[in-house]
Every structure is written in C-alpha cells, then in structure tokens.
Image 1 (cartoon, rainbow, N blue to C red):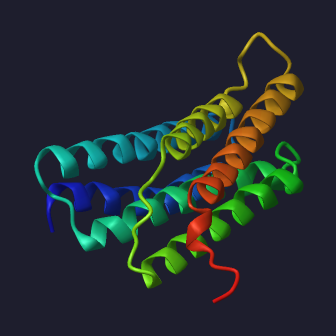
Image 2: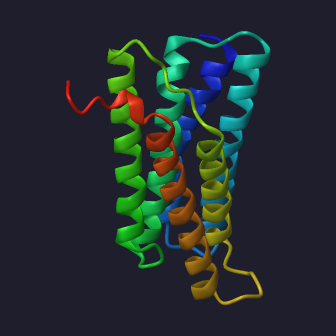
Image 3: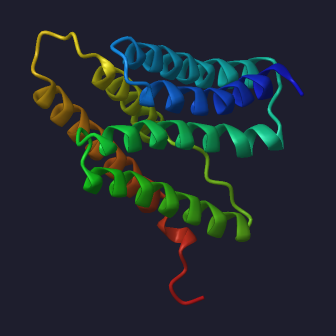
Length: 178
C-alpha cells in the first residue's frame, strides 16, 4: 500500500474516533473532535497531492478517497443534525447530490467515459470542510445560530451548484432515448 492510500485509510480510521469524541460529554471533547476532523480533512489534501505528484494514483485510491471524504463529511453533518444545528433538509441535499453525481458517473463509465471531479466539486468539498470546522468552534464572538445558518447556506448552495453543474456539463451522458 502506497503513502497516498495509507493517508486515505488513516482518514477512514479517524471517522469513528471523531464520532466517539463527539459523543463524550465533556467541555474539551468538541475541540478534540474538531482536531480529529481537521486532521482527517488535511489527509484529503495531502493524499491527493502525493498521489498526483509522486505517481501513486491507484484504482483503490480512486474508489476509497472520495468515499472516505463523503463518510467523514456526512458523519459530521449527522452529528450536528442530532443536536439540531444542521437541518435535515440540508443533509438530504448533500446526500441526494452525492447519489446523483455517483449515478451519473456510473452511466458515463458504462458509455466509456470518465467524469473527473470538477472545480465546483472541489470548492464544495473545501467550503463544506471549512464550514464544518467553524461549526465546531463554540468560542467565536458571533452567535452560534448565525454561524450555523451561514454555514448551512454555504454548504447547501455550493452542493446544489456543483451538482447542477455536473449534470449540465455532462447532460449528453444521459441519453433519454436509450
């Protein structure tokens, strides 16, 4: 297993650690969960860089890297949902977009085409991870309700935009007559 794949697997291992820390009822635990979330998020940047820069791109990495990202982000969103800080409708938007884009990619592959990650998808991922990091901070000088709603709106907007963009740019993949 190469370095990039090891970093991806580290991200997978950090997900249950994050979840355990989230559920510990102590003042420090939200910050420990944030530290784990940040570390896991940074492995995403690092494994992608290493894979491309050192020619460590593998089929395993192509499969596991985006899966690890999605599970990490959805885990954090579900945790915030469980305490009423992330609305269920926003979580459904994120899940629906992921299923829709994954389905589009499957149809494209069946037609001999690969749909690479687009720029808007990368912006969506980065803004989502930053917003989720901000939502962990309880010591900011602005009310949490305002921060939460700004973050939710940024996440929902970038998710919708990138999902729509994938379908607009690749609409030819969906042959309505076939």
